[in-house]
Length: 215
Image (cartoon, rainbow, N blue to C red):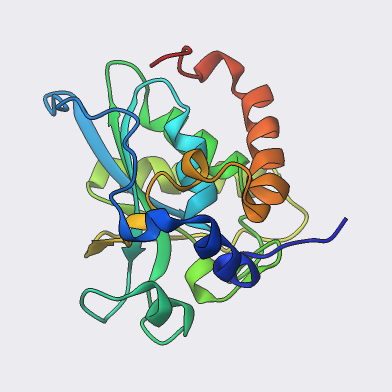
């Protein structure tokens, strides 16, 4: 079976998407109650993958794909792919702390990508695919650092963890056609051969944390 990377399939995805010039479909458009909502920004490779995973977690109220950690204002996808802006592809995740904990959010983060490959996830290669946690509070920083240290001490992977834990400084939402990508393009090549299998593994491991059908 041919292995696809995101860059090689971008043009194909645009063929599937007349939606590139249209507003992306929103799975849930009701107003979010921010009273018990916390936000964290995570980079774990292609944001299409990260988004699809977190959208399925009970307690996650919104996932926005975008760019963070760079030095260029309002970067485009093409600029980020050129590897000259310093940004990582990330997802900004808003979650209801009465339904899911920060520990659970980070457990999913660590278990659904390889945190030992610098600037790479599978066939997606470049600094935009680096593993990174952008924290919004001292509490988020401490929990992320604790989790990373425990995994390091346990030798969870043969190679050392390269994930960085950084102060959140900026976030720019990605172009409209990147939002809700997997749900809108399930039959696209990258979605079928990369995201689909990844979701299957995730749903088996975290089956008790998934949203119920229709949520």
